[in-house]
Amino acid sequence: MSEMDIVIDSAFDSGNIEITSIKGATAKLRIPRDYKSEFAQWFHFRVCGAAGRELVLEIEGLEDSAYPAGWPGYNACVSEDRAFWGRAESKYDADTGNGTLTIRYTPASDITWFAYFAPYSIERHNDLVAEAASADGVAYRRLGQTLDGRPLDCLEMGEGETQVWLYARQHPGESMAEWWMEGALEVLTDPADVTGRALRAKCRIHIVPNCNPDGSFRGHLRTNADGVNLNREWAEPSADTSPEVLAIRKAMDESGVDFAMDVHGDEAIAAVFLAGFEGIPSWTDEMGERLYRYQRILDRRTPDFQSAKGYPKSSPGKANLAISTNQVAQRFGATAMTLEMPFKDNDDWPDAEQGWSPERCKLLARECLAALVEWLESDAD
Image (cartoon, rainbow, N blue to C red):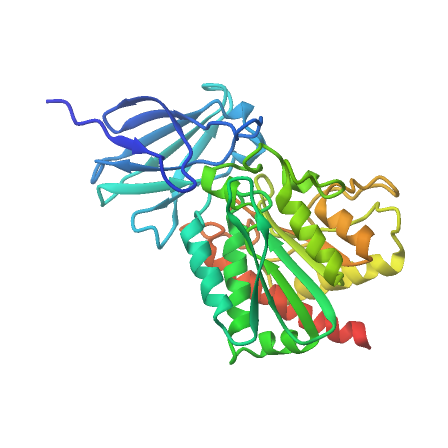
């Protein structure tokens, strides 16, 4: 008697996969593109009926994905309780099936969840916002509405004069960015946490935990409900296609910005790093030194951060002002930066069981905020 076929589902919050074929505990799969877009990389699905059997999941066509360099050395995220996310052994073969990632895993449970990175659901986002908004000294602000009718949530706190903006998930598939936000909000709303107390005393802090809730729910990698990459909209945001950026930039115009961190994930580079605003028209060495001083502080504070790997710097006058960090630095004279975390592991400090994980995202947020306290103190000297 042949073994029963597994069942694969993805019709849920941030779910995304196409089934080509299933035979027993083996499946051939493909990753659908974002709506009205060429981007394809995010997957999130569940497998039923495989308890005690080795699953063999072959995701094909990945040489045509958004970032083919993201697959070598990558292990898929897996969970049986949706609380702890480990890694399943995965191997990439660029020459088979136009690029095939083969995931092997033997679950103990009859329901197993797989994802490109540990998902951060809309419901968890709602819980995060509600809990933070109920904390002493925190104000909630609805910046606007997305194309699918979702609120764009902002949390504000602090009595200081320095205007700090922290925002995440312009690219919705980069779910590590909202795990980072959860860690940051835990620090900032805990009355016993002296790092949070110091920042609230020195700064007015504006936090947008998820800039792209529509793309998050739809299971997109990089785009919103209209297939628009929000991090290419900051020069001329549109109410019709990028209302999220329009609303955030308008709020920034009202407050001003002194320090900004845009939180992201990188598919290919197995490290944590910062990208700055080199190449903006108003660049000065003094502006640059403020950025690099923060980078040096963070580098000293945590082994999870490094500065050897990262993106190439733009040439003088060649920065793309449609990208958030460049636009914010140019528009406000702010110390702006993009924080990148890996989808893979951190090769400097690998973790065979989890790779880069939600837990490490949250710990990194604490270090980023502590580095900001030190940066503000040294900036005042």
